[in-house]
Amino acid sequence: MQASLDTWTSLFLVGSSFGVFLSVIIFTGRSYRNTMLGLTVLSFSLATLYYTAFWTGYSRHINHFFAWFSRLSLLTGPAFYFYINSEKAKLKTILVHLVPVFLAFVHNRIIQYYSKDIIPKISFSWTLIQNVQIVLYAILVLYIFYEQPKSSRTRLKKRLVYFFVGYVLCFVSYYIIYFSGYLIIQIDYAISFLSILFIYYIGIAGFKHPDKLFDRDSLNGKYIKSAITKGYAAEICKKIDAYFQNEKPYLDGGLRISSVSDALNISQHHISQALNMYLNKSFNEYINEKRFEFARKMIEDDSNDMRINEIAFNSGFNNKTTFNSVFKKYLGKTPKTYRQEIKELDN
Image (cartoon, rainbow, N blue to C red):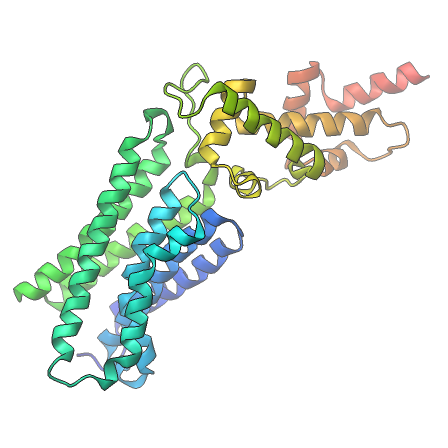
């Protein structure tokens, strides 16, 4: 076993530290979906951090508590499953899935009281449980993905599912090679490096493009196969309208469908479907329309002396180009031209 950091272990130390940092950034999204994505990345990163300490020999000098990090794949599977599932899970359901994680933690706290003869057998049992569990979650994730309507299988969601399966294959192949007696440190490093690529892609892509995870329209702008009725779609749209009228979330330029989903406790997929079925609009079209209506009232207000750019920003638009294009779509003219016409009519 190595006694210090080398090029590879230094790379893994930086990589695992980056993963912890990435998970913190994801958690700042403060939504159910981001929490699950953050836990997926964090659990993997902490496990990699422990393995790095093991490779370098430093694991002998850290608190025994941190050995529990090596069992955190028991959290990675459930976290990703809840993240990729279109329906928000209840707390009771989540806790049931996390039972193995809690048991592993308890085991880690009492293992020091076991006899030395039984420790290897128990450790092997936990390793077997980890492998079986992560494979079951890979199967479960694939199942729920292919059980969904084709219209909801977005490219991003497909990539994330396949990358997770790639990580699972890496995880299981490591132990197969290890117990076969063919594992060498170079193979260990290669498998770990691939796992990092798989998980961190999931974290970065999932956090960067949340709206592309569940929302996919057909060529006609309608869903090929709907999971909700028109009546339910109308009910959802009424809830969305009431929420937007009372809270005005569209004034936030960073508004995402995940935020609306968490606020209303309605899945992102159903929100997208409802808007498409009942209003024939995508989520982005809907919020831009609300922003346009708000901006139009500001322009029509004689007492408002804000510049056009300020009005755009205060209405939730992130740039003037989008602001102008939305105005042209609804009025056939730019905000500046519209303001000039209003002034001429008043004079």
